[in-house]
Amino acid sequence: MVNAADPNAIRAVRAIIARAKRWDLFFALLGILSLMVGVLTFSVLFLDMAIQGVPRLDLEFFTSFPSRRAANAGILSAWVGTVLVMLVTALAAVPLGVAAGVYLEEYAPKNWITDIIEINISNLAGIPSIVYGLLALGLFVYYFGFGQSILSAGLTLALLILPVIIVATREAIRAIPQSIHEGSYACGATTWQTVRDHILPYSSAGILTGVIIGMARAIGETAPIITIGALTFIAFLPTAPFSGEPPAGLFDWIFAPFTVMPIQMFNWTSRPEAAFTVNAAAAGFVLVFMTLAMNGLAIYVRYRLRKNIKW
Amino acid sequence: MKSLKIAAVVAAAFASASVYAQALIKIDGSSTVFPVTEAVAEDFQKAKKGNVRVTVGISGTGGGFKKFCRGETDISDASRPILKKEMEDCAKAGIKYVELPVAFDALTVVVNPKNSFIKQLTVAELKKMWEPGAQGKITKWNQVNPAWPDAPLKLFGPGADSGTFDYFTEAVNGKSKSSRGDFTASEDDNVLVQGVSRDNNALGFFGFAYYDENKGKLKAVPIVNPKGKAVMPSIDAVMAGEYEPLARPIFIYVSAKSMDRPEVREFVEFYLKEGGKLAKEVKYVPLGAADYKHALDNFSKKKTGTAFGGEAEVGVKVADLLKRNPKE
Image (cartoon, rainbow over all chains, first blue to last red; front, side, top):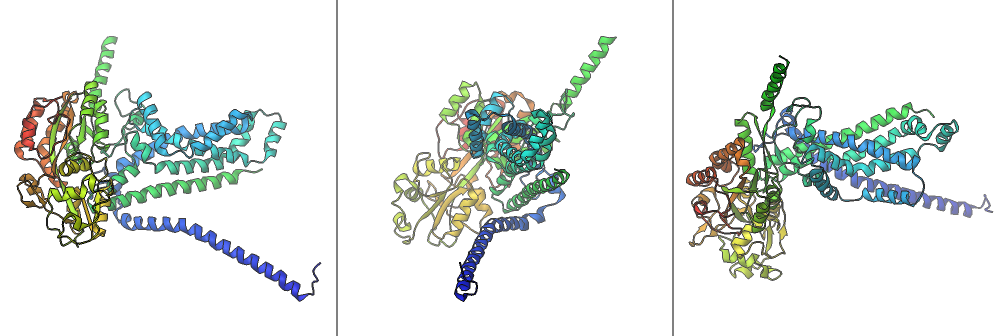
């Protein structure tokens, strides 16, 4: 028992508090420093690119095809290619990833097979992307005969981000209070009814975040896309829906040859003329902006969806 | 009456099909040949007003031949002649081809602008620096030539996968791919430019276009040719046949099957007619006018096969190459 009036005891307690506070401050500083390493590195790189590239950005840059003359060269085929590949990726990866995540959380029996599947999914997220590229080259390009097309590229990137989406889906579902589950089952709902009416609506914000994080990773991928045969010079756009060779359909473009933004950028950086470096910086700025825009959209949608949830 | 209507619809469909069926020419291969092919493809598509589509990829000379011999591409860009192994692959798949030289690249040896003691280099001196036996032993400039200072020798060159490396080692060390391994290698020539421009004791080599674009940061070294004359790399020197042995021809290989398609034939003819002018624009060296004509002649006669027989060669005249009877 410390005597409250004993000045020595008070001093000792104060010393302990002061030491604890010093540690607190030290740790906060360390945290800020660690954060700055990432933020500052990115800021410097981004600013450097922006200063070089932004003056190059005009409407013509977005509406011109690549060219041997740096001043005429643009990113039309690259950004259209990137958008279309991302579209295929999202259409393939989101239903598969969400369904797999829901199955693992809600339906899968807890046994060793499920455990093995879970471990494998976590491992898949760490596999180098070039391995996916080689798998896709054999499977999609040659075995299924999709060729060097937007479809092959989109499916390859879908494989790449599938683990990210599955893991995000499961995390989002686990964040839902157990009482919601139990309440639903107590009212006599089947598992599917529970999933449809409760689990999916409440977890959609988290799932969406995962999807966007995965897409943001996929948009910058170069290695697997080059492996499956993306091109470097392409001065035409994929066939628009219903305008191709009869019988023209809505999805003719998925078999079109293509290029994507990172490849266009890389090609420009490896050119001898310094003017192409400016083009590369401008393309890089657009690519980072696309990624940031996707993240921004994710934050906004998550905010909107969260507002509608009332437990 | 009804059948007539159906016939009309079918006919209309076919008529529109011929409008829609846009011809596509697929090209892949060497990154060295890429700038020339890209320039030709760009102008050809403009000349055809978008009715013919051309795609150009960069898989490297070897990667390009892999696709070419699988029948996936119509034309393959190559910075070296086709090798025996690749000839066999093509033969197995029944792919015949016409080999066409389209331009020269001048391999340029560069040093830092502050380097004042190098006035010229002989092939023997280059060999002393680059041969496999030099690894770990030749580390100072005065070991190559006693007249040079006692300063560290820092070497920069393209990676072992590039055709530039293959040709340089063949020309200097007498055997393709045989070289010392302890030099700074990069597949990106701009990295080599940076390296040599920042190090006073550096020496490196790469394609002429990269030197020409960075003349302020680098100093090109005249190379003593077999006739004993030191020659600075330049478009004129290569055209005059004086920049030897580091001027190398670059090629396109056209699949014989694709030659039956009029758009491919037209494209190659366009390449051989306009290629010289466009090559010069992207800092490559055009062949002589007679050589382009000869190549065009070989093309129209569909002379299939390679003039090299699967072996690398240094210092052959393009005119002599074109006269040879190609082997398959």
